[in-house]
Image (cartoon, rainbow, N blue to C red; front, side, top):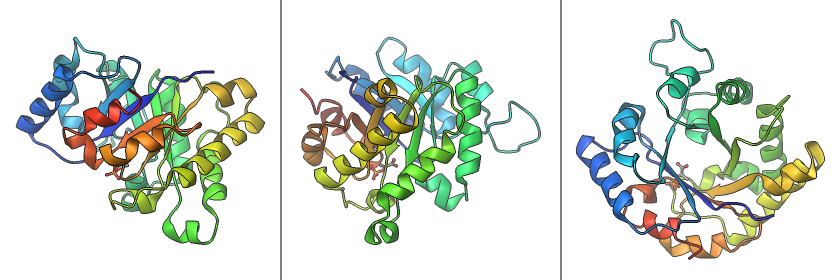
Length: 248
Ligand code: PEP
């Protein structure tokens, strides 16, 4: 089955009013692969005004996080219901920075994933091992365990994109080799086949994240089980366009 190539840009806590406007303008005016799905994730503050800027383009918006309760006394949080209400279709969940800096557990990520899907959002679900876990040969076990917990009881995988993001490769300039990434992606697909069904295994997009740049995206995009990227640092640069166009 052919899966639509997916490229997400995670801006993290970067940018200013001036920068987000010019970044989006650059993207909207660029010649992007029409066959690619492009989703950018500015800081929450800039999501609503970004909507107008992407309105006449195929570019979609994602939040970088959300809370699972619909409303209430949760100072500083934004709910999945509020994202839905504001017309933001995507949310990134389980990013390693949320796990390591803000202490998010697999169980919390599971609650968020369930709530986001029930609210009608689409989820970029991030998993990945640390360097220590990779050195102990535990990469695949860790990633599958994270996935198993985060998706327990899920009734449909239609609105999930899995992002394999080895922690040691995020923001470090140390990109996984094509073989390293492909090996984990293939293992995730195999797990989907066993834990869910073969149709899901062949249709779910599994994207790679971790120091993706224009200079390495083409080789990675050629791998059988790599269906796109989640891009951090390079999504704030003009080269993001080249990454989106990796398959042209
Ligand atoms: C990310 O934040 O999801 C990421 C992959 O970052 P970078 O591309 O900067 O490594």
